[in-house]
Length: 237
Image (cartoon, rainbow, N blue to C red; front, side, top):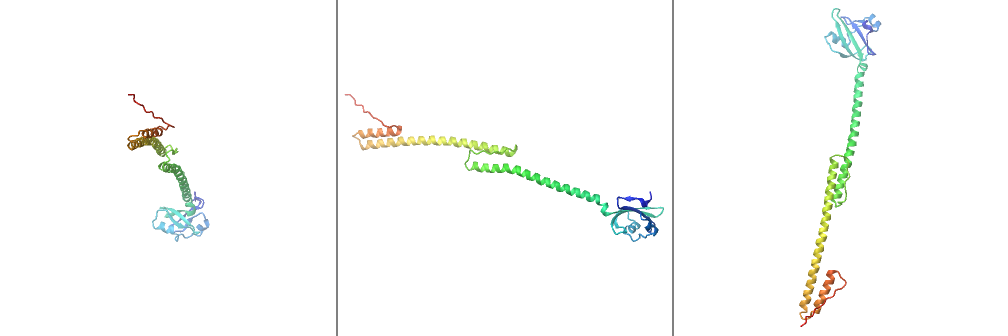
């Protein structure tokens, strides 16, 4: 295939220059017939100076191009292959665009996932906070309802067990306090009745009638009765 018919991509092309940098093969035959001088082209001068890598340059139309070359040693000719940068970097730009879109999608998914995770964790934590505050405030009947099947649920269940144990202990303590208060009240009433009887006895050493009346009043009060009767037994001589 002639060099002039080689196509690189859609807009790229190949051409040949001789040792004097005159064009000897090109897709545009008119340039060849005029023996167009390419010595002023940056990539041609670089090739003459021994450059071997691909380089950036411009074509005859002034477009930025990516140029590679090889030298045909026996003839001293140089074959150049150039392609506009817009076309040469199109796959790279497409890859960058796809990568950028994938990164944006990944960030979006990560944000959504983090929000969902925060919401999933935040609700149980708030329930634990409110429940702990109510239990700490004395509402021992309150129970924390957390169903996450993880450590948060275990913590909620521990709070519930603790509240149940405290509620049971508090109820038992209340009963003990009531019983103790009742016992103390009864003892106080008995001591009061005894003190009153002793006071009557001391105030009436010869008259026993007031003593019996005091005994009857104390018996009615202590026993919660409506009335009481005291009998005196007379010894037979």
